[in-house]
Image (cartoon, rainbow, N blue to C red):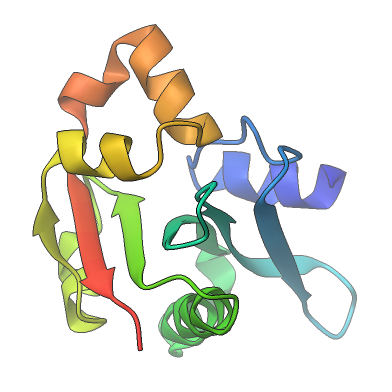
Amino acid sequence: MDDLVELLARVDLTVSGLTAPGVRLWLERDASCRPVGSTGYEMSADGRHALVRSVAVDPSARGRGRGTQLARFALDAAAEEGARTAWLFSRRSGPFWQSLGFSPASVDDLAAALPRAEQVRLFRATGQIALEQAWSAPLR
């Protein structure tokens, strides 16, 4: 977990709630065991929605499609687990997520679908939710 937190902090992603129930995370390491990528999601209580979290690629490993592979891995895993809609917060990476089939969505709709998600609770508590951009995509 320390390696994951360090990677996420390095690329300026939220590190809170990573150990919450319903959160699934994967860490990718290079040949020297250094963390170079991560991906994950948090399932809704009803299992129909997944909040994509922690898709990160170390700056030294970018530009080779790794982020797309990691994101697709999480989306496939969430779909296999029963999720029908994927959601995420992103103010900086809209074009990347659009390339994976995501469309802009209402923050209120995201929060209604995943009210217990740690990221939703944190963003509500800090007032950051009003500054966020939500995205959603149907899953297969």
